[in-house]
Length: 279
Image 1 (cartoon, rainbow, N blue to C red):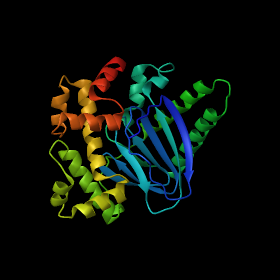
Image 2: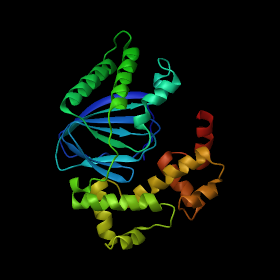
Image 3: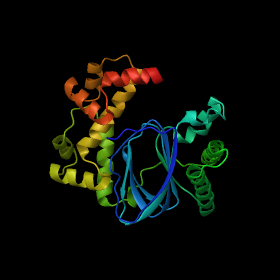
Image 4: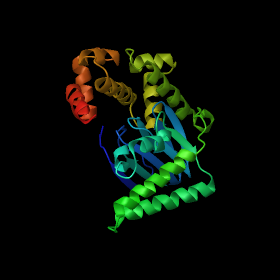
């Protein structure tokens, strides 16, 4: 899995053919995704959501997410990535924390009214223009535009996120329930066979529908859930690496270390040292 960090970045992309994100990922910056046109299926931790034109997707730090096709060939979207420290030279730390409260907790999908869609698109277009043109006070204006976007998001009345499986195909609905089961039981000795028994379907069919719905193999998703929890324990707990490996469901510390390095690019001990230096 590719691991990357942005203090600030904005991009707009248009896909004219079916597209699935090349790699599932989670990262230490916030992400604001706005769908200009088309439809997408979004895996957000253990939820699978149908995202439509004019929807905002608010993705917290270290939240597993991935986007795949929803039956339409083309789509266009903006994505803004940022860390809180990007705004610390123009706003006090407490104010930045207050402005990012909607980006905390679980990922959220927000359907905007037409007037709000127009406002957000114009704001994002200004932000992108500043990114692409070396104008006077460019960085300052970008930060002011980002602050305006965060104020807009903070004022939104965001309903409690409910499972809306009626908006998903039967395949996506099954994959949603499988992802939820994995999130709730990741610390148990799970396997493709044991999960397929839980849902009374064959391992082959389970693998097929999960890959079709989410764009990743079931074992990839399970490993990502486990490694994300391991990251939290490495940063914030006194547990040893062996204890953490067992706690997140790995029977072998060696296997845990190999999976952790493949996903994160460094060993569990290296990650712990790095996170404590930067934290």
